[in-house]
Structure formats: structure tokens, C-alpha cells
Image 1: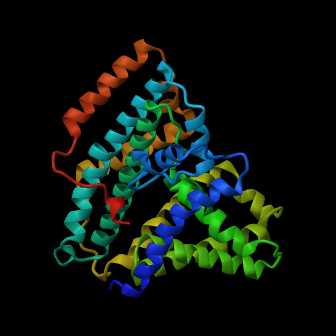
Image 2: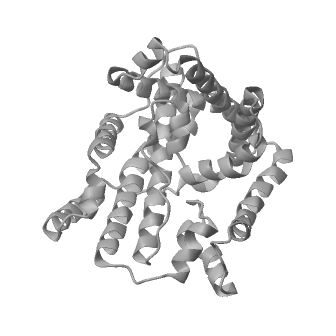
Image 3: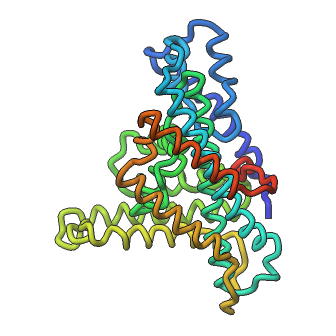
Length: 344
């Protein structure tokens, strides 16, 4: 049930987000506005307007003032990012969207916890590839125009704990919330209780930022609890034999899997559970797509092949780009599915 009383809070977040740009300018003497046109261009630059990444004045104004035409290498990296974003959106996100929409638009026809978990998994994959794809396109467009946007996603589903997840997911929002909410609440305090309270309040407000309903409030509290628990256990186990054992490389895949399951379980606040098992809503194609995305993410995490491709010579890039266009032609979803993160 949507809470209308939360709408002013959501509007306030939007207002403070814009206001923070101005505050950022005047708080830091190293960033100066030469004229109104520079500031207007910073506010109106189209790639980041709809859903981010959140851009700060100190990150962008110096680029306006010291602008240079993009080099061929920068153009290559921009084009590679745009193509990567298109594949994430049109091949991955939209495929998962068909499955998640089929479940959430008619839950009564898909009874059981197996259907619920598979629907939640499809939605989680859709959400990531949708927003990450949009961010890649936005960053690529900025590069083509000679500007640099901050990285907004760093393979968050490979995070080994909840804290690391928020350091990898929507990085510009997480850092904004840290700087303008968490740090002011904890400045000058050494009390762990106050720090834990600040974490809970910050995560609650982060949930409220995503949507004006009790579901998102509970969602924020859910993550706040796990962040606090992780901090408590981290302080207790640091330096102990058990803590050092958990840091062993052999336990890393298990920690990634547990963290991912906790993320999927967060979707429990957005649908009704049924005791019967039911059947999975995932198709063979989406299951294969899930494992393909996992392998690609691990390869990028370990080898950085996408970054290396952007710097590769033409005889490597041209066939790679041709393969990308072939994938887009053969596997793109033809239905018009809007970017889901525009709803938040």
C-alpha cells in the first residue's frame, strides 16, 4: 500500500539531490563556477538526467573548464561502453523482464515458493542489467562528448558481504548517502550504538528513496540489520583464528552465494509466499542466460577483459564489435520494455 505521507520525503530527497550540487560547489574552493552557462550545462547534461549516475559539481565542473576534444582511444572506450550497455539492456535485462513480468503481473497463476523464488531471481537479474546497462550507455555517451562519469556498478552480485554489495551497487548513490546522511550523523562520535543507529536510519531512508511504501521501508530496515550484524561480527572476529579462516580464498564462493541469496530474499517483502512448492517460472533460455552472465562477470572480475578490449588494437576491436552487433540482432528482445529504474 502506497503511503502518501512519504511523498514529501521523496520530493525532499530529489530537491536535496539537486541542492547538493550547489553545496558541493561552494563547499570546495577548488571548484569554481566561471559563469552561469557552465553551471547550467552541468545541471542539464543529458546522459545523467534520468537515473544517474549521480554527478557532483567537483567531478564535472573542472571537466567543462578544461574540456578537450576526445581522443580516438576515448571514443573507442565510449562506443564499447554504449554497446555493452545495449547488450545488458536488450539481451539480458529484457529477457529476464519477460519472466519476472509474467510472474508479478499474475501471481495467482504461479502458486508456490519455487515460483516466488524464481520470479525474485528473474527480477533481481532484470534490475541489475537494466540499471547497469543504462549507466554504461550514459557513461559511454559522456565519453563520446569528452566527459568522464564515475563508475556506478562494480559487479555487485559477486560481493562477498552486504557491506561490499552496497560499495558495488549504485556507487554514486551509496557515496552520496554516506557523505550527506551517514557521516553527518556520526561526526565526532565514538559510540558504536550511535554508529549502528546511523546505519539503520541511513538504510531506512535509502529504502524510502527507492519507493514511498511500507515495503521499501521494511526493505531498507532489512538491509540495515544485516549491515549492522556484519559490522558487529567483523569487530568481534577480526584477528581471531575463526576470522582468519573465513578470509581464506576457499570460503569466498560460499560468502558470495550467501550474500546473493540474502539479496534475493529481500524480494520477499514485495509478494505473498505460498507453502506449496509450485513450479519455476524460469525458462531454459533464462537459466542459460543466468549462467552466461555469471561466467562473464567472473571473467571481468578476474581478467578485466572488457577494459582490455576498449584498449585493444583495431584488428581485435572490429571483429569484437561485429560480434556485438550480431548478438544484438539475433538475441535482442523486440518488445518495447522501458528502463525499470525510472520507476524509482
